[in-house]
Structures are given as structure tokens and as C-alpha cells.
Length: 283
Image (cartoon, rainbow, N blue to C red; front, side, top):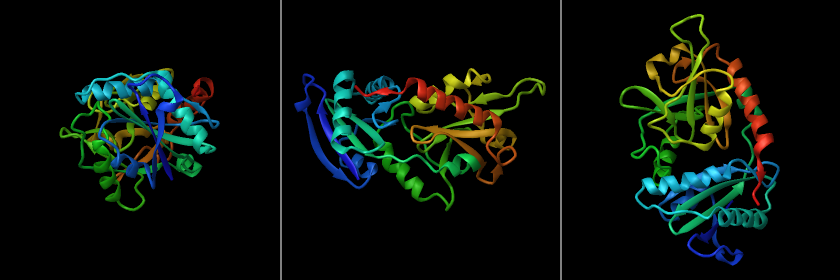
């Protein structure tokens, strides 16, 4: 069950400016019934701790500007609205979707359970899909319905759909960012981490992964060509709910040796350490 609250971002900060909108069966259903706008998603840790909420707020502001509706959000008011939703629902862990349709901010919350550990131990299968974002840097709610349709069309057993650019570049997932560990032309050089930058959403989790990745190996902000996937040593996708999730197969191609690789595992470990250091109370 998803519960949605509304905050009038144009009003003075006050608890009474937060009102209940209603309940929905899913985040997708909630978004379908809200005004079009920008959105961002995040989860809690230890019940009331969140990671880089300020970056999520900045992302909302950047997205509405790209959508032609520039506006600002008061960070403290937003934190108040999130804290109000946490108290009202009382879930052990929560997943939030903030939808900014200026001047209104909608706070949708549902109970959150991490993905099964088995997925991280064995990795997942992704398939290519024919879909793209018209405005790739703006996280717009108008893309949610298209992504939902694409998910329903995935073959049984596929975890995620990967969007391929017209030039054959692997861009991003329907709800994730994509990374590949690739060998360099110099066989003695260290591998590099490749990920598209200019044509994909600049996710907050993606930014955090890049922070920890730069401590481990060189990062090249360029997409991997679909034709080069058979040469990938490791692949993984990232999102708020998944964090870092190994990918062991794309379409018919087996990635590396068919299991999560050592670099992916190290990045998973470092990401968890970052969460322990930086996740902070909402208020």
C-alpha cells in the first residue's frame, strides 16, 4: 500500500501545510493520479535514516527546470514532509517517491524490503529494449507509464530492460544505471569502468557508486557498445532499491565467467560502508 501526502512548497514551513492525499496500490498507480512533474526515489536505512536527501532535492529542482518549470524546494520543509510520512505510516523500512509539480510536492511512501540476497550472490539477467527518454537528464513522471509497459513485455526471468541508443550504445536500464568493467587495449593495464554519462539520468545512487569506484579503478564516462558486451569482464546495474546489483547475462551474452566479479563485489562492499558512514536521520 502506498500513502501519499502533499506539501505546498510555496507556503511557509509548517506541519499543518502537509495534508493526506490518499492511498494507492502501487507507486506507479500513485504517480498516474498525480500531476505531471519531476520525481526522485529513495529508501530508508534503520527506519529513519536516508542517504544524500539534499542531492535528491537538488535533482528535483534540476529536473523541473529542464521540463520548463523552474522552481525551488525548501530543504527543511521537504524533510518535514518526509518525517511526517514516516511517523504516519510507521513502516520498519520505507521507500519514498517525491513528485515535484510546482508549487506542490507530493510525498508517496510504501513499505520497503531489499531484494533477495540470492540475486546479489548469483547475479541477474537483463535484456535489451527499444525505448528511450526524450529528455534524458530530466526524471519526468511521464516516462513511468512507458517503463511499466516495457517491464510487462520483458521475457520471464529477465530482471531489467536495458535501453540501447540509436548508435548501439548501452545507455541505462528502465529504472537503473548500467556499468561495465572492460579491459583496455593494453593487456597489462588495469581494467576500466565504463558508463554512459551525457544521455542518461544522473542518478544519486549512480553518483555515489562513481565516488567509491574511483577509489578502485579508472572510470571512463563513455557507454559500452552493445556489440562489445561479450568482451565485458563484469557488469552491474544501480538504483536506490538495488544499490549495486551484478548482471551476469545480457540477452544471449554471458558476462565474464557467469557470476558476480571481484570488482563488482568490492564496489558492493564499499557502497555498504558509505551507507553506514553517511546515512543520516531525516530531521
